[in-house]
Length: 436
Image 1 (cartoon, rainbow, N blue to C red):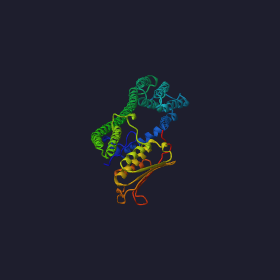
Image 2: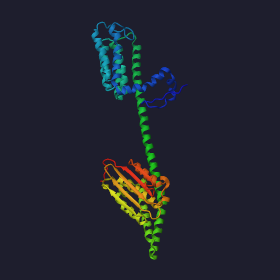
Image 3: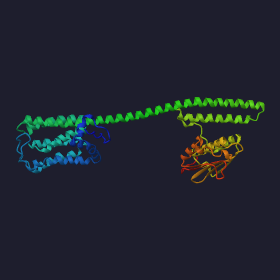
Image 4: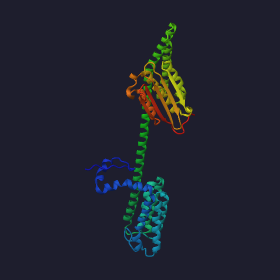
């Protein structure tokens, strides 16, 4: 058997139940089932089309009665209708069919109007095929209306049909007629209630699926937060502990060097201060990972353009002469792009300290114009150490990644003279960005 196509109540692609597999494979039933979702979407977009079609079908069923008013009733001989003018029959047919146009918007009122017209028609001894409008109204009330109104409508229908068969329009076989009339009315109510229960069941399934999806997302977020907190604790325990030991040792060595009058005391103090700054930034970054810290005021400010002076002072104290120039109003830059500039300069100078060798110098330039910021860090490293990893180091990769966030371009390599190393980054300034 060929695989069954996929459908669902809303036209999305889900597999049909196993019990419907044979129906899907049937050429006629399968086509009807596959077109069900398309018909439902059409009805949702243009509900008046189906309502108008129902009205026309019910009215067309009355044409045989209108063209031949002397026809017998549906259950044998009925009262003679020759005394009823054709215009009255047409009026009854119209009065029974037209209210069906509002059967979904106001089913209780629609049934009440049709029941009243039907009672008046039967009181004249007239049976017409448009009487099936009462069945359509009952079906619509069971599907769209309130259940108390449906109970009253069912009782009224049973009483009205009994009254019509035995008193208003006596027929040849009253027991048979009453049986079929009540049977068709019961079938209309049963079909409406079945479809109503099915819609409620599908709505409950959709609501459950939605709630399960929300709960799944919540579990994922909770798991992610717990994992981030665990990672933050581990990083703090490992990196933080080691940094604390290094800072303590540097402080002790600096004190010892000072007491002995050694020149390495200043370098050791710079080492200790750098370690403390690294610990401070580590705590700030790990604070973002902790699930129990959501307030921005718990985080320290990120470094910016003004913090470059302190960075350059530490680099100079480490033995690398650095010149620093700026062009343009850098204070108008936003905090995000200021952080990017700071990190690019920091990474470039770290690379210089590692690879430039002794007697090297560095030149830092930060220039801003209307739509871009240019960061240029050049050093005068020795020729034999000028070719530095071709950009494969983590610091140089970080420069490229930070520049990519602002659509920047990065130039890395020896300058035109061939001596030293050049980091040249051009960043796009987002429109409207300014420092508050």
